[in-house]
Image: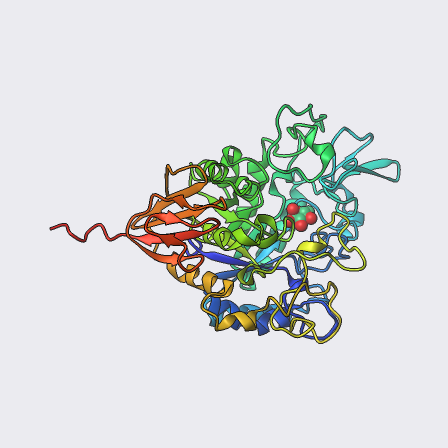
Length: 478
Ligand code: GLC
């Protein structure tokens, strides 16, 4: 299983590399940057949606599952990208958006019964705020996200067959699998019962209204597994990683059909050793955790954990057992930006989506035109400047990707003093100091990687730092 310990690099296609000067990234641009990804040492790339879309949710509102949006290129460009990636030993994953289509998908007009309708709305909320129901021609259709994203009915066999067809289409074209979007919302209560009030809520629900309800009926229906089985059927043994927005204790039905689920408990944990320890312990109770600390919905490492902790956060992400997802820009310590003059995403996520910065030029080397969102700080943060600097974030991430291959299987969390997260993977011990002060760390052997030079003195780890040590226990034994 190639993905078992893979590092999968998330590309937000609009913002990675523009090749035609329209200020929006595209597939040919990604192709041009494949050498960077191969040099960095990642195993695969995951592309956020590239399908035709009116872009109300920037591609997560799909209007044709079997084509490429002209803004990103063509099917031929996709084939070239896959071929170029393959030549460099890289796999390409796509983003499957099975929960809803765009309201402009022809299916919505031609096959209204592939969607979910009601004569009267219940109390379900959309993840982006407001009722999850919108009125059309005297009835209401369900949308778990924007009103432009009507929810599909996965209990309708015709819809299932159409989706299976689309799923197979990309696998045949060379995609190695899918990150599966919003999969906990795939099936909801068939009787559309109201959600009861919440006694406790997991993580960060996207809207405040939702936080008041236990989302017991509006998502995660008991027959979800049947739909997941149909998805699995269509992709064979290709990789399926689920955006299962549920505590890991509820993963089981998903992991019966998907290979892995994002451990959102860790993504939402504050930068605090005890909380991180608890989140990792919960998510590793069973196999199947995929790790993510940043993405196009929640922002980048430097901003989420503050600049002084970002290198240790990269070390954490890249030393846990199981596939890790690295968001574009995190390898150079790119920060979230202010967004542009005009707001594109109504949920306020533009600031996580500023373009990748390749060089110090005003456009950051992203485009020859005017970038759809301006670059944040290309002069201060860019790939070119960090390439030959052994202390750069880029060098750190590259070293981590090399070292990661030497780590032992599984994980053993170790008790440490407050403020220190520590775990063992075979001969290697990893320790991270989430405080700003020196702390003793339960390490063994010699440091093989530090997030800052001299961060480890004896067994004392400097504030904000992370370290990997290696002990060869066989030494000294007969
Ligand atoms: C997922 C995507 C997010 C999108 C939503 C609706 O959470 O990551 O960007 O808005 O699904 O498709």
